Length: 456
View 1 (tube, rainbow, N blue to C red):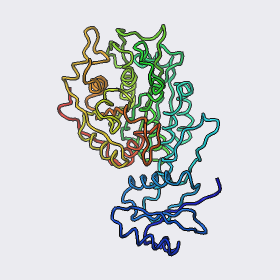
View 2: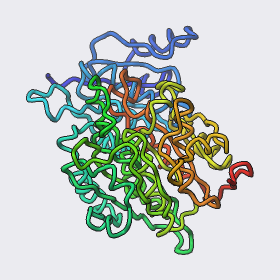
View 3: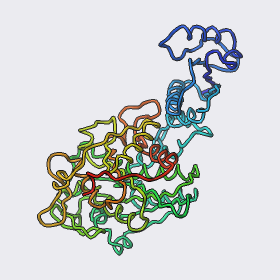
View 4: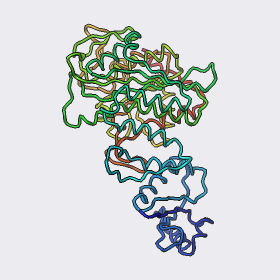
């Protein structure tokens, strides 16, 4: 494709007037049409092949990202240079929107068609797209050891202290629930801890916790074959944590944050855990495994315990593609939010709204907690045919110190997009990265009260 240029200018601006009478006429025409937000100028120009005049500058960063993404999608097949010649404090967000919209995972195509778009000052798009890469990789490429390696390579160079625990160490440490998930796989399980201690020394860190099942067959409780290939993105929660840590470190945020991900592969084998088996967790609580496809909560339970024991965090957010039940409830519109703190709920929703990531608070309580009581162990890993997303959250809550603000984000319906939007192409979304980053960056004090009715 020959070099072609597109430019976007603001109606009535000095930049627009410099482009000639046709642009000025288009600006006047645009001003008379209330519903029209932009207009294309169709005339020959010596410098630009395509000119679009917009009616107003975006009022916030989120709208700026959408504008950048929309204009990238508009010109991506006809121009290889896109310029925004407008004056706005949100220009970096416009660039970020273009960078996010340009994402395309085509590394395995022998004749890739996409043209890579890159720009400086594009927000945290590199971090989001790094998370998207992780989610997009097939399970035979991104298995636990390879995943741990990539985390180390990408984050260590940013100043993050990365600690990798291999299977033998995890056995000695007592993370038996996590190990039970991976015991049917030929691939070893790993836990990766990422430390970004860039705040005051006396401040307890904020903990980000992610489920990283690099491929989920369901184990002995085997999933149906149809669409099983989608289970390569059952590590979407961990990708959000890794991407957020990448963004936090890249932007040198002055806070203390620890990220932890449990990396396993859930496979059926003669050595795999069986329905009915009982395992002792790192916390000392025993779990009866009645369904080996309810495995993500086992991974999270042990790493939740570990991060609390070792780091005494001020607050915890864990993310996971945890249940199909949340998709049945919320579809692909919002993530499920489960928490013991109204304060933390409000923080997640507030900062999620800034980056166009939606969360809906789901119910929790003693009635659902009782549903996971076991006849032969402290608890079982499923609660019955109903309320599956809430009983999964109640399972996790049994591994949380009740004095610590905690939220569980079930992103099962949000990790992968079947259809695109302004800044999200079809495929891996990188959902959660921007919300987590914005919480850590913008929250002044990590102090969240615990709801009285959640002290059980």
